[in-house]
Image (cartoon, rainbow, N blue to C red; front, side):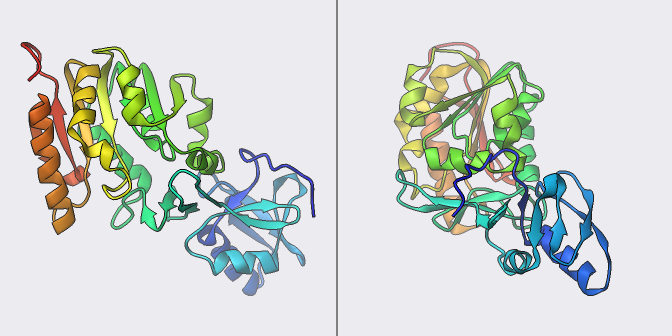
Amino acid sequence: MSNRVPDRMSDPVVSHVQVAPALAARRSGACRATFSVDLGRTAIEVELTGDGIALPGAEVLRWADAEVVADTSNVCFRVLPEGVEPIRTFSDVTRRVVGLMPTAGAPTMLVGGFYMHRVKGTDPWTDTEAKLAAVAPVRGAVLDATTGLGYTAIAAARTAASVLTIELDPAVVEIARSNPWSRELFDEPAIERRLGDAAEVVTQLPEAAFDRVIHDPPTLSLAGELYGAAFYAELLRVLRPGGRLFHYVGRPDSAHGARTGAGVMRRLREAGFDGVAERPGAFGIIAARPLRGRRR
């Protein structure tokens, strides 16, 4: 057993999406193939040897391991000298298994079998861009209430002056560190990360500190407190007058999404938000802090 501690930010990371075409190329007799070691962010040319796929840094993805990866559709793998390792772990916070799940584009995260992004008819990065577009322009200071894989914080930081992002679960941070698509979450100086319960952290933030709030919570059954009136009142408090909120609620034409959305809209209005409206294309709701007058 190796005593090596993996460098999670630099190890090759692959999934069936990348490996299956390389296996097909080998079966066709090819000696080289286009391949990605970062889940499709970049592509390189690799040699298909008798031992396996020759990767940068003298790493080899052995053919037996490549077959395992190709036959596994619901998790990504880190390539180590001793073999492949699935990118998943058990969360002591949620008491659920957390894993990195591949898609044709950016991966999503599975928490106890729940997808953390939309994947049907879209991909997680496009899903993230739709959420931000609902409250465009994304400028000034942004609060990302639930980090997850960090896509919201990363995309917001490309136009905003600063982003504060909050994550409850250390297991989720561990998965994000292994995800090539999440690297800017840890490298981008405009992003500040905090570990803690968003329902508590937000109460400690100054009033009127943010121009935009993006609230993309786990499903109601996993994080009911993040759908509550008290939390919404805090989100209103930390928004600047005229500042805008996007709240993801799920598929609007499903019974669950419609029911959740109706409750969210009612509680946002009761908390004092103006301009509460559905944004079906982003599967969410927008709202704003009033420009004048007392918060209701």
